[in-house]
Length: 256
Image (cartoon, rainbow, N blue to C red; front, side, top):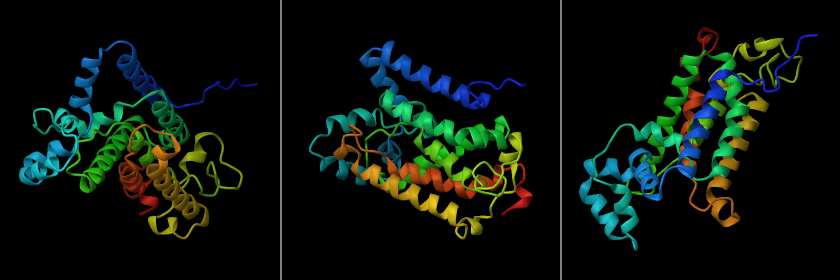
């Protein structure tokens, strides 16, 4: 009888686990408070840093209306916008709980997509949905100097992409017999239009948005988070994953 691995997770997903865990462990146990603060200023996504170059007067007015400007000015840093926080914010997490939640979702939805995509496409897709999450958050909070961190936008993008194929007949959640091996993850994908007519896909989509909104709006009240949750970035990543899936899918000619 063939032996199956205990943890049947694609290598690229395991590598992401190791990288994210190592980065948070470094921040928790190695970096001083001053060094960790520098890492946040340097690598977190801070919307107002981009706004300073686009609308300095509007930003000055917004900062002037804040009751506490010291924290805002701290994260504003030197005010020079950089491109890398659009990506690097995803590698930082608030605490082990925040990291653990993202790793659980990464295992659940990253593994199916990694089995469908090759490693290069999977990584590129994660980067695109990460940037999309930051862009949506920026569009709604361009005067905000609160740093945004976490891989939730990328993980949400993976979730949106999986919605396109996991419920297909003979897919991993198709409700019928699943195709053997990785073939279950390579079934023809739903068209974007079909997502809104397939009852299972539509139910999951609506459920995801309701849970994401409620969790984002109520997380502090319910004690799940010490700070606000950037649920708009999650939504941006999810929508990007749902819409852009076909650009990365090896079987793109089978759907639109």
